[in-house]
Image (tube, rainbow, N blue to C red; front, top):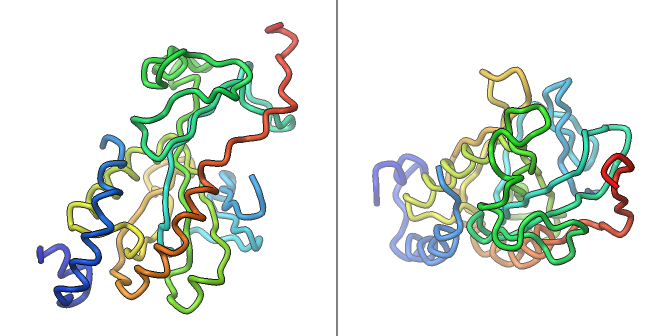
Length: 241
């Protein structure tokens, strides 16, 4: 067992526990990218706080990551916070490398993968700096408490594009310790060095006894994360018609 793993666990882990953890890690490792509903954790940028589904506000929280998925969304026209509109094109996949525009996208922006799409290149955003397509990570979480893993609702956090690289780096570091990310007590907080609310991640310890409870909820979490947005009300902006 590596020094990092020993430090994170707070002590020695038995051989059977280590084997069980490593068994679950491999599938996650291959998916990690390069370094709305009542279940959604939203972010209040003005207050720099998380707004939990139970309406509690907090500047940080701890949880177990049950699963994660990558999601791209492209909207035509300038963003208007007062008008909620469906994306013109979107993609959702378990790994960033698998992202391709959904066949259900109202206006597909690329015939192949998202990586080669013109809207996913830096400098295409209306502001002239970032990408026109919004890249995010969706993270399904549960409380780090074995007693409630079966009954607690799965909550979903949607990160900003600036959190993708930190998440990939964090998930890779956990994987390198031969741990599935679901047994690591993760601290979610905001980068203190940015003026906007950009999520960061910190490993606080191992909750090895939670592995079975987390894995039993993983299929449910994956299904939730891969749900496609409702685009039935999509309308082409008048200026673009």
